[in-house]
Image (cartoon, rainbow, N blue to C red):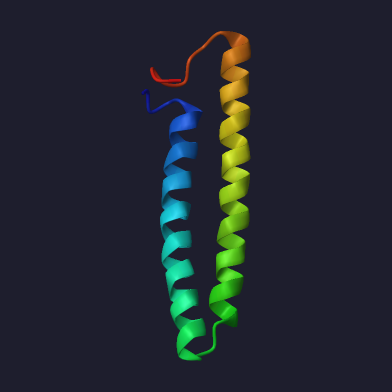
Length: 77
């Protein structure tokens, strides 16, 4: 995969945001179960999930554009 490929940066963003969304999910669950304030964690998780969804949509658009133009984003695609 070329680093100039826009899909590379979207994939990195998905991995980065996805990792932190999972971490914040665990923190939110633990906060809820222990009775501490979890509103801030839940709102942060909401923002991360929205960003993750937008990145996924961008990745699908890039894939569809590449398929229409005959280019391939990855060897496995």
